[in-house]
Image (cartoon, rainbow, N blue to C red; front, side, top):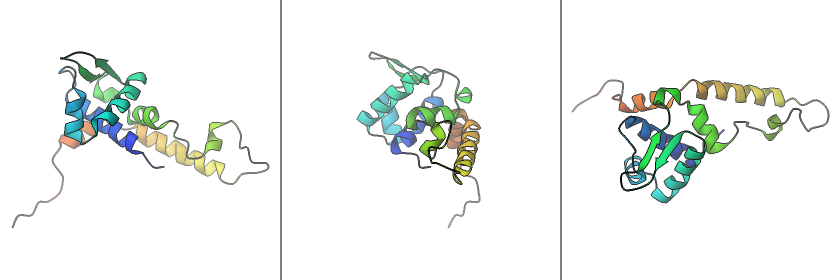
Length: 144
């Protein structure tokens, strides 16, 4: 599975909104500048996130975007599925049965990959990603 630029930028935007949760809407120009995302593309992504029910948008000079729920309640899985679509690594998992005639040796493996990916992404919140971003880099620092 490979996450597209849309998925990457969308998660970055949600993490940026998590940093400002409870402080009012954040303008897309500010999100774009802080996260290095082209603003026209970000606007498309924010529309997708709004339609998925993850953010709210407010128009006007004091407007912008904000998370609808607390960052600890927004799962990374929700964001990725909203931005990328279903997590199925192979199309045959989207139906009840494999379209291939006869036994299929692959389907069970791909189903396991999908389950593992689902479990990992549902175990991480946008709030946790924001905390990781705030935390200083771990490990020893060497000065010369």
